Length: 79
Length: 481
Image 1: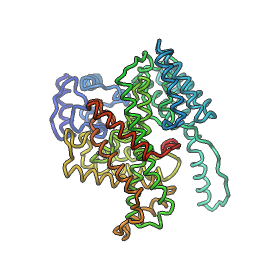
Image 2: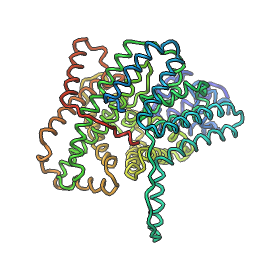
Image 3: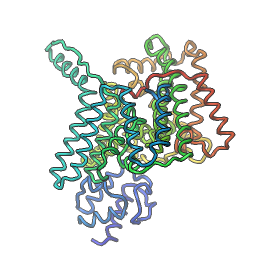
Image 4: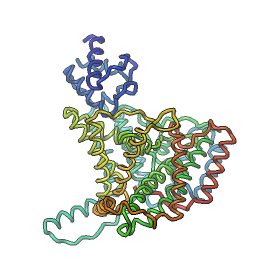
């Protein structure tokens, strides 16, 4: 899948779960930069991404993610 | 040997002189001194368990290397689970075996098998809850490939046994502490003085605030049935302050002492009572434990239950907090304490308002009325829940709370409002104001930017308060955990 498509879909997931779109999608974006993306909404975002792309993450993969760029690459490698 | 003792002063001064003057050549020489002093410090507190600490260090060091070397997942898991069983097993044996043993007999008695039983006498090794969590976290991090395992037994031993944090934390992470031990520490005047400031504030919190509150709490708690509800409410207020000042005071001293050696430990408290919701509170209270639980319990659990959406989230939160409670000790009161805190999260999960600003009234002198009301409400809830922390049984805690919600709540607590109480209230007021002023800073007395006159006026004032109102204290609440 194209990187831009993945980013767009992830952005839509964030907007749906967090109910706002006050963030700029960049490779350096981290959860800390996004209002409402905390440890509690995190799993809901992950679950929604899994549904959207029809993939399954491993916890170990998620623990290693440092930023949006890493998340997008991980999704690409799985879909 | 508690930080606020003459013994500790006579221990730390020669160690510091040796550290910065004699053993300063390399990280290895510095670590040798730290290890020897740490083992001495631990043995001074309780020599009987020194061997246990040494064995735990060696086993975890070996397992870390093995986990890293194992190429197949299956083999890795064998070493990881050996580590989990070893560390959790130690904790269960020394801390909880009596609890389960008594529970087992209680169950038998419920079913009518009336058999008497003795209580096992197992001594609790000091600091066991803290150092086993630290080594357990280390093994999990190595397994998750988040850190490289330590290949230097000396560094690793200091990581486990470093004396400022061995008895009551902070529960350090390998990623934060190990790299600091592998490089030579250079003396920094600014860091050293900052450490002294943090020790001073910790000392004040412990021997002035916590100990004076303790006197009031202990004077009434034993026969609380004889006091009106209004006194009981005041007492829970003092107990909440005592608990906070005791443990945050300890933590500030531990972090401050560590700074004297040029080593930065993690922050453990960040003015938690200045929070507007329960999630915010737990982000600032005993941070080294809550982040540990977050990473190693809540995250895996909520990952497993992620398809259950909010229900899964709530189950994960409650389970995590029950464990947080139970970590404190083998008593049902702690389980209920954790359970209640978990339940308080439910409205937040449903309203989706978890993420609030870290600092209340950022950049302002005073909070808004709404912020103030939220902080007060949260404080009252936490203060009432702390009754479970103090009570010796669940029944006692409920009885205490039941008496609070009675008609004597409107009866003025005159008998309790004596000179000591008023003085303690004033001291608490001063304590709270200083904490409020420093709430955006790195610790509660980070006044390096103040003018030299103001700083010294402050130090002298705190010294005076220590001399006038300080009480000797032989132990800390958290030593029993």
